[in-house]
Length: 257
Image (cartoon, rainbow, N blue to C red; front, side):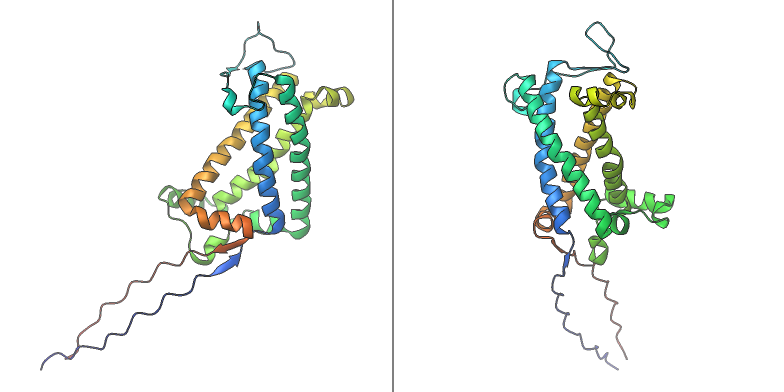
């Protein structure tokens, strides 16, 4: 008997893109305030570094002493101000340090009230298993980004990175900056000793700032690779378009006698 082909159904229409609320107003405000303040503080910090581009450990350090790291002279297009003036750079640095510190304190306090850190950034026990961590690392290395509902949540690498910045890098950056302030040192003599001396505090301050820069570079790279329009829009409006789930492969149709 001749084969009677089964009717072929028309392809289903593609589902409408799903928009979800991804970032609260407090997160978006803190993000863009940080973009401005961190940029200004890094550029003014480079000018301060140009005045003495050597790092030491301990309480004291000067030109005859052995430095553990000698920094380059940074070009003026990377510094604030754009001419050699460590005094003006310190004014810029200190002014925006207060904005930076107030923004961190306000964001952490509000996140504690609304439960953002505990609910969204807290790593779950299962996510910390070596198998889960290794799978997430492989997915990122292969540029396999989450889709569907999973894209609206932080993955374990994001959680660890954000918690490391929020709980470790930023507080230590602020404390070491306070330890480097002559006025605060006069009032709180114990501040530099928290880090083993003024020069050690300066070295730790530099290392934390470097960590922030590395985080920023990786963050921007991930935004570009994951889709910059969608990612940036979500940080401006709060709304994020969920990447669609991959279509399931269609089963081969069988002919019937």
